Image 1 (tube, one colour):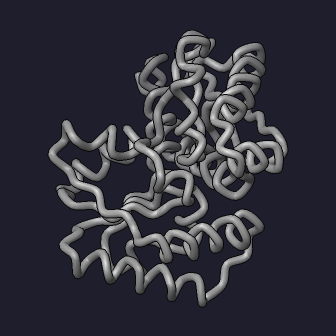
Image 2 (image 1 turned 30 degrees about the vertical axis):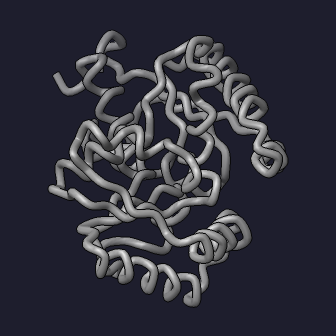
Length: 240
């Protein structure tokens, strides 16, 4: 492949390890399916300690969260990335604080996930994620123009969902009890008229998928990875 036709360099602003790793692996593995054996776009990733994010999340310091994101973005720009992605739904809540200062364009995870939901014909979607995400407009602000409605869990369900994510999934602890809870939660959403569920936490696809969910799943992690892969390839004409 000629240098001029090489895919663009993807910069990953990472937050939690498991979600970022799934996104990274997806780009690499599926890149080979499009570009040939062992091939994938160049990728750089930067992440602060997750503790640095969590302490700011706990005190609702969204400006502080945004500043961490911007540090990562600037480091990735210096490393040669052409555009940025962030495989973490929650911290997108802080993106507006730094949008004018970003050194590169940013592919938004919620926009990608919603595009997939609409393409699959979903019109009423359950939303699963951390308590910070569920208490935000990261997804609602991206659905009104598409004629899609969002259903969020109850407060008690949000608390248990957040516990599973932050105490288990980010540590790669995958328990059958957690799967059973999520299946019951999604079944309840189905009974309230939902025709799909957004896995708006990048760790959730590690234990939920179309095979074990009562509703079709919108996997935000892989949707973002695939969108980044398509953009990286198309931007340089890497498929001819």
